[in-house]
Length: 516
Ligand SMILES: *Cc1c(COP(=O)(O)O)cnc(C)c1O
Image (cartoon, rainbow, N blue to C red; front, side):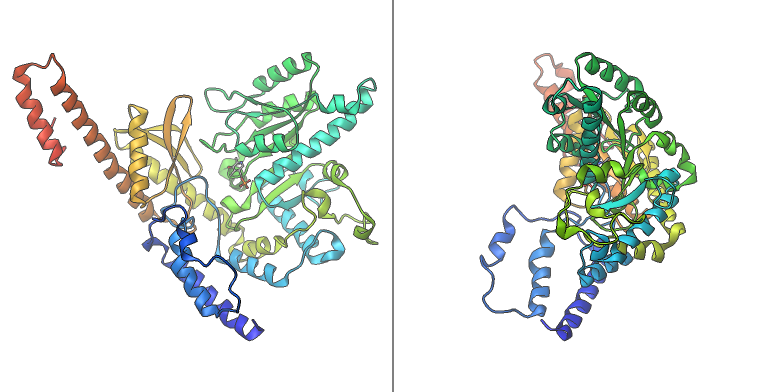
């Protein structure tokens, strides 16, 4: 492909993306394909001769599009959002067009320096403590990781290495392997699975502490666990708190946990993958409480701030704790400006050596949308979730399970869990809206999240109508089953059989209003 052809293909691809986003409402949010559908549509080896881009683009429509779950659809209400925006898409394009890798400053000074700039922009935008800024006096700063999972892993690894060094100094009687065998990490039982994964990968045993009835992890639960473990000769090293848990978007008590961590010399990491966006809103300033105790924090711009995957902002109070833990330099990585200024060599802050120029899409998105626009986006999601919450509250067949938080509403059909599960099954079969189920203790519920790039009031109304109509059918078939059971009861009174049969036939004919 020469540059002339690239221009044609590239421009056609931009049109393709714009058409996709403009017309996304016309598609069912869930695909109708069955597993393995694509294997039958594609050849089983690389074509021997080059193919025309027009044919490739046509094949995307023919073979790929039917197999997509449309995350940017306004009818996507599952998980948490995965962000995108036109400026961010352009940022990805230019970044891959430049094709640079920025693991050290000299490998592309702009790649490192723009990241320093945008991480400070974001820290200010989110009202974080000034210690997290590169431009502050201290050793703090921000870095863009690929995901929340990577950020948590980096925090656990750094906390582990720092703790081992510290314990070696205070416990000369213990060998390094004895120390490593006695470490302990903590998180809440509502935290994301990536926290368990990070601890497994880092070979640090962990405890998932029970959240209170408010679904929040409190300081006293941590203090109790730490006391128990210290009595067993273990060394508590890190607590990972969550602001915006995955199930119900609950906010752990960072201040309470922070006080315990401070007095016990435990690293405190905050996973604010989704809810971190709310730091930017003055009406949510209480979420910032306790951040003065935090050693590291992550927030996914790719969830809630219009930058596409992958883009997780991570801040460190003392970046040396990470870079010292990971620094394994080789002679070929050295350069003459190393360590001479405030400029980080980001390879020491992350798992891989190579790193993408992600700062570009952040910069382009922030400039194109502006701080005001970014805040408006978060507020819009919150408003739409409130609209949905109102619908639920006004239908007495439903109940709200946990307090609405940001763009998430947790709700269920009153009564047996089976009702909620059947409702979800029906919705999944119809593919018009996509929600997922969650469970707390023994209660099953559905999570309704505002996700799409351009979700509007009419889309929330559409989703509610779909949910309501399917709930009618679930409850109707429940009544049919009940009446059938009544007829089969040995104790059924002959005088009642007529009425029951009549109700049953009314229900079966699909007019539930008439049968009572
Ligand atoms: C989504 C989410 C994660 C996982 O994010 P990745 O970037 O995909 O690793 C972690 N924690 C919380 C609270 C989340 O909501």
